[in-house]
Each structure stands twice: as structure tokens, then as C-alpha cells.
Length: 184
Image (tube, rainbow, N blue to C red; front, side, top):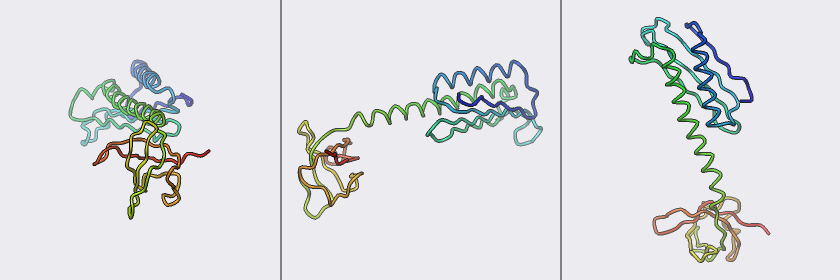
């Protein structure tokens, strides 16, 4: 982590055992997603409020470059196992791990999206519709709409223009989306 993790305690006496558990959980998050920038943890012990029944709660805030921050608030419930701060820490970090794994999965999807682009040419336009067809290099014909063109104006496209695109299933067969005009 680029910034040293910050761990705070409120209404609870920090113990070495609790500190070790938090450190271990943070290391596990870093192993799952090494690009994490910062991590703040607040462990809030029993405060005597009737709402929580005096049970422990944990708040975790994570940042990663170019990503939305991740915030986990594990508020104690009526499950009295959470009276033990170690259990609350474990459950809060499990929730954080699920979000980190989703973030990691989303990163993989973002990287593979560019790898699945297909090259083709504008084959024809449909009269009186802002739509047409693209023929991929493999000969497959795909319908596309004006709103699928992302880096040019639809009306400036011509039959024969080289494009790249992704294919998604449409109502009447394959549909080209994220259509980009290829430069020379």
C-alpha cells in the first residue's frame, strides 16, 4: 500500500491480538488487489447505545488509483458473536474482500474488452433509418445503430469505411456496438 494503513479505535481498548488480526486482514486485501493506495479502519466498541445493544462495529475505507473508493460498514447486529471485536473485524474484512474481488474482476473485464474488438467495413446503410450493417473480416454481417458509433458522427460514415467494434447479441442477430472509425 502506498500510504500506511490507519487503524483507529473508539470505545474499545486496542489489544495486540486485535491489532495483529487487523494487520493480517489488510495483508490479505493487498494480496488480492496489490494496487490499493490506502486503508483506514475504525473499530468502534460497545458504546452503550440502545440501537446497537453495545456490540462492536467496524468501518473500512479503501482507495485504489482510478477507481471508486470502497467503503464497508459492518454494524453490529443482534448476533451476539459480534460482541467480540475480532468477529466483527473478520466479517467486515470478508465484506471488503468481496468488493475487492469484484473490483479485480471488473479490471479483468475492462482489459479483455479491448481484446475482443473486431475489424470490419461499413457494408450498407438502411434507408430512412439511423442504422446499417458492418461486415466483419470473417464475413459475418452485423447490424449497428447510430448510437453505437462512439468516435465519429454517424452521418459522416461512408460505405467501405474501416471500423472496429464489439459484437453483442441483438433481437434479430448479432449487433455491433462501440463502433470506432479506424484511422489510416
